[in-house]
Length: 276
Image 1 (tube, rainbow, N blue to C red):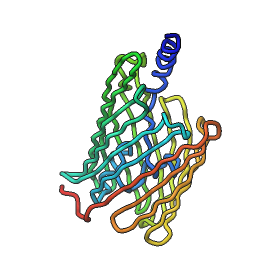
Image 2: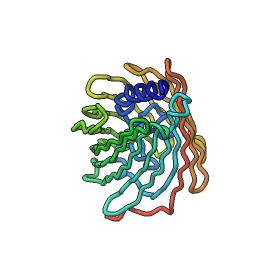
Image 3: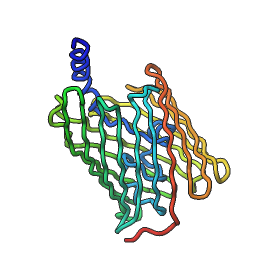
């Protein structure tokens, strides 16, 4: 009985921290240290939604992300994108264990506004479950994204996450933190990607991330990144593509907390233009 009470108290104490941010990441974002704000690739549910406007190919995929190599901090995701009067993206995510977990579902839409401007929005539904209490909490959040293309090959992105600070109703957390990401990227015909991005979490913690991708031949891409500021880490990874399938792995080494990893498998359908 004593152990059970201690378990409940421990879980109650970490629920607010657990719900402070959704810890999902695919292998591309992890390997690039989060500098995927302007990255045009397969749609993964938490990217800047305006990137959907750059799509030409529908795709589906699965992803596994593990934080600091702790089994209880693993997340699984299924995602996909398709065209309909612009481009739509969907994802389903599950994080945690049976005792304490968070699941989410997102729907995103992005389209070209002008030749130099793309815009997008995302609606997210979150569910937080604590078996020992027992307790379930729900929340709906939204994201807004823009990509500005001033000249060929140069992209500027803005991604505002949860600007109204929606939160779980019964978790002791008044709101889920907002986040503002601003980035600049240089990309050349898919041969390389070089980006810098500022992350302003809850309008208090600020850090800078740098990322680069270089393609070697038609099938292999090497990636690396660095975070500095309130968060310090370095990352690396690679992607291997063959025909319609791309396999990606990413690793991030936090200076204090250790290694995180992600594995992503993506399948692309036949090429087609967006149905506007």
